[in-house]
Amino acid sequence: MANSAEIQQFIKDAISQEKVVVFSKSYCPYCTLAKEVFGKVKQPIKVYELDERDDGPAIQENLAKISGFRTVPQVFINGTCVGGGSDVKQLFDSGKLQPMLIG
Image 1 (tube, rainbow, N blue to C red):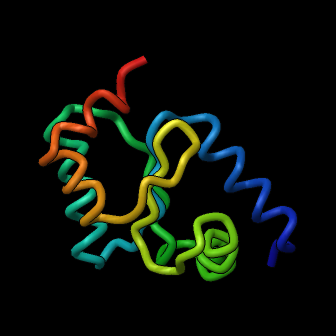
Image 2: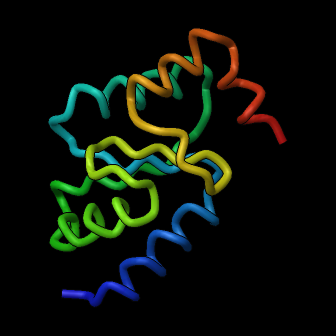
C-alpha cells in the first residue's frame, strides 16, 4: 500500500495533467451522471474508478483532505475540485460548465 504522501502526489499529478479528472466508483449513479454530462459537452475526461483499484480507499481518504468531502464522484476541472455529480449537472444546466472547459 502506498503511503499518504505518495497518494497525495498521485492525486496532484493526476489533476494537474488533465483538464477534467473524475474520481469515481463504477457502480455509483452520481458518478455516471457526472460522466454523462461531460459526454454531452464532448469533453474528454480522465476517470479513476476507485472501486477497481487496490489503492482506491487510500485515494478516497486523501481526496477528503483536499476537497473536504469523502463522497464520489469528485470532479476536478483545471486542478480545482468543482464538487460531485449533482454539482456538475447544476453547472451544466446553468451554463457555467462549458466556459470552465475552454482554454
